[in-house]
Length: 131
Image (cartoon, rainbow, N blue to C red; front, side, top):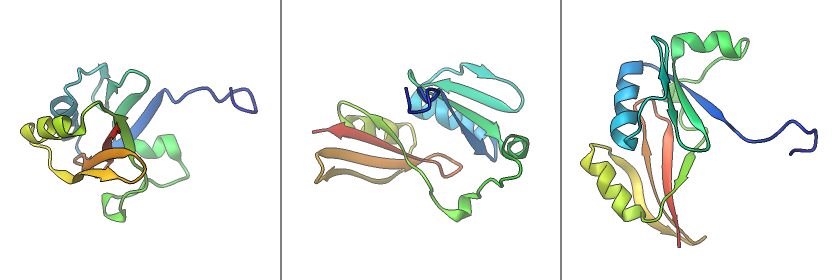
């Protein structure tokens, strides 16, 4: 538990997406995940310890008002990392599914081998292998 007693674990991350159907297709094909929940505005995928909720960006404002959601053109502000046992194998699998890598695989000086790719809305994912 955190200092104040309420911080425990991150259970869901909501990504605001421009085209829900396009994003659902990408997540189903790239990660080979089944949809845990969906309606006309969202789709949820379970990554084991955290769920990713894809939400139509038209519904974002009601959740975050008065803040504004960022545009793809503004660039990356975070990176999701998934630890994998073999980055090269996963890269080959992703490329066979039509995913274009942004970089990698690269052996990093901090003892990881990594590669990155982006979803259709510019959310960046890293796969990382501990060496």
